[in-house]
Image 1 (cartoon, rainbow, N blue to C red):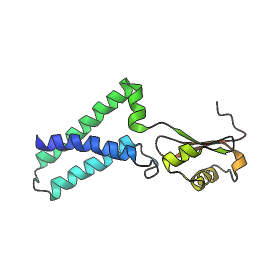
Image 2 (image 1 turned 180 degrees about the vertical axis):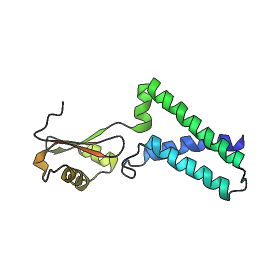
Image 3 (image 1 turned 180 degrees about the horizontal axis):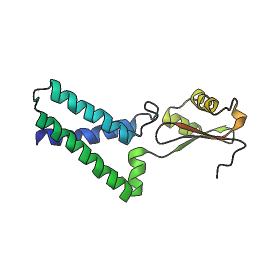
Image 4 (image 1 turned 90 degrees about the vertical axis):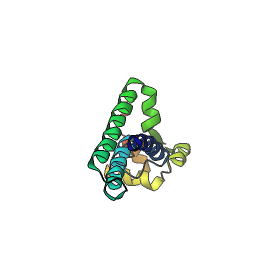
Amino acid sequence: MYTIVHAIVGYFFLLLTVRVLSRRPGAQLTPFEFVIVFLIGGVIILATVGDDKSVTNCVCAILAVVLMHQFVSWLRTRYGWLQNVIDGAPVVLLAHGEWQLEGMNSTRVEDDDVMAAARTKGVMNLSGIKYAILERNGAISIIKANQKAD
């Protein structure tokens, strides 16, 4: 039982930690998904090198994490506001040629990061970007100047 409680506390601690950190490291995973990867890996390591090396203990801890993840996932779908708390909301970094400094500073994204994302879309200069948006998963979406945003 002690392991299960620790797994649940660890789940919420890692979710909070990943949410508070910048979105940039794991650009393909949401913080919600990031937690599962780290926590299950950590539980498996503890079961292998920790004091309690029982398979039963490891399985119980992983099941606790998976069930917690399912429960939080259900809460996210039931209460829309909770999704923004857990995963964050998209942040506009550039709008109509104007850098949105508040959004850039809060997410620690530099103009070079936006331009690198723009180049992957074939946009070579600032005038070719209508909007640059930091998505919840850490990727930067580029809406070209000649493309409709609505």
